[in-house]
Image 1 (tube, rainbow, N blue to C red):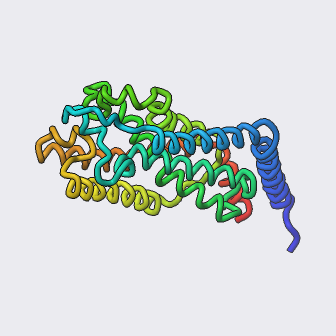
Image 2: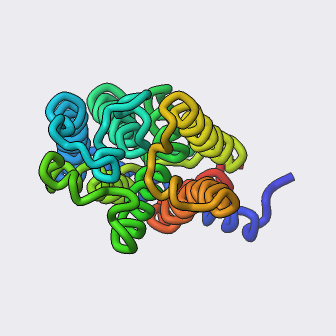
Image 3: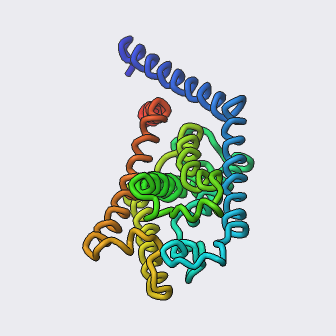
Length: 278
């Protein structure tokens, strides 16, 4: 049966709309994967990976507590007790950021950054999951919780005795730049977040394991890693830890929402392409 003129017009209109969507995606990817945007993304990951790697080196090998300090209230945060520097979420986070940005840099060199419905490489899939479940939420948890407690009473989280041995630039690398770099990465890397269940499961597992680690350190060293846990009564201590978990999950949802808003036009194009192909 021959098609009516109306059906022909509808078919032609649908075909032209599909071609227009593909053309917009091609234009989008040309801008995103080449030229200034490509080099900006590469430079961001290169500088971040170098900065956090050097921060780890300096923190671990160059920052040492003065042996002549004898006052227990000043020394408590300075002593290299059981667990070493790996007991601090800040130190673990800067390692996490160095791993993420190195992985992102490798993806820039050998992987794929196109705006597409599904990642074309396992490297990119791994990059996206680590960012979503760990790098973005933990960076913001560390940054915001540190500076809030610092402004309330810095002795509870970063005693003034540390100023003599912990340089200001390193303080900002591990407590400020981790979040700033994650935000910049959010604007320069197109990504699809994992399913909410998979993302939150990874996020929750990370922070829960860290809280278990805090208790292990407390058991063997006799002291809590953070002075604030020493001064809080038992109910408030575990309320504080529960809030830490909840805040980390909230940071995950914040990253997911921000990613959806920032890359909304691209997601819309991909949705249109999928509907027209279907």
